[in-house]
Every structure is written in structure tokens, then in C-alpha cells.
Image (cartoon, rainbow, N blue to C red; front, side, top):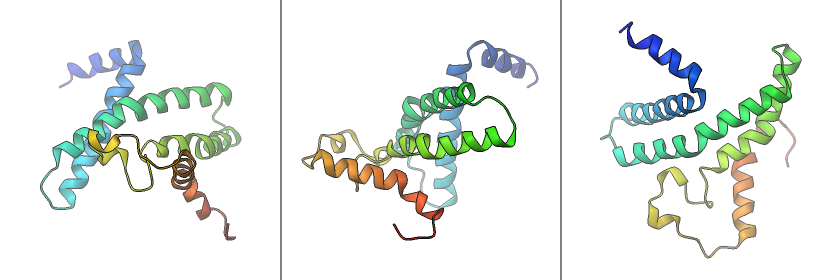
Amino acid sequence: MAGWWPAVLRAARRHPWPTNVLLYGSLFSAGDALQQRLQGGEADWRQTRRVATLAVTFHANFNYVWLGLLERALPGHAPRAVLAKLLWDQVVGAPIAVSAFYTERTGVLAFCTADQLQPCSCSMENSLHWSLWFSLGHLRLFFPAEW
């Protein structure tokens, strides 16, 4: 066991992006499989495969690039810098990351099959409305006044 760990660390230093993508995809998939197991049903490996595909193709790459940009734009570990990074991540990054799950108000990308991902007849305005609502809907938790 001790023989493979230094090789993983060397690979992570030499190729950080692919290592990050593979690790993120593995953890995302393991989380989905564990959630299914804890819910007590049969494992749905098609769903886990779709979740892994979404994690590897979008989320891991987006997070690697986005967090790197945040670190370069707002360097440091001081509380003020960390708070600024958190604010930018929640206001800009989170809506983009969350919107990857929603293709329209009823379709969750991670759970759709290829035939369900065909262009819909709904208007672009309606799709944008629901994408923004799903991605920014959590902000109401921070503001007590009604929107």
C-alpha cells in the first residue's frame, strides 16, 4: 500500500489537472453510489454512470479552472481574502455549477437519457428563467425579506 501512494503524489504534482478530474469524478461517483446504498434500494449503475460523466466532463474541469482563477485574482489566506473568495464563488461560480444540472425546470441533466436531452420546444426566455431560478434560488436563505 505504501508503494502506490508516492506514485499518486508524483502524478498529482506532475499532472494536477487530470489528477484532479479523476479524483473529483471518483468521489462524485462514490458519493452517488453511497447515497443509493443508504437509501436501501438496488444500485442504479446507469444513474451513477451519468453522474460520473457529468462530474468528469463539467464539474471537475469547471472547479479546477474556477478555483485557480479565484486564487490568482484574490491571493492569500487572510480572513478578508477567504471571505472575498467565498462571496465570488457563491455569487458567480455556484450558479454556473448548479445550472449544469438543469436543462429545463423538470429535467435534471444528471438523470436524463440521451433521447430526453433533445432540444425542447420551450422558449429560450423560459429556459433562462428557470436556469436562473434554480441557480440563484438558494440566495433567499441569506435575505429575510421577501423577493
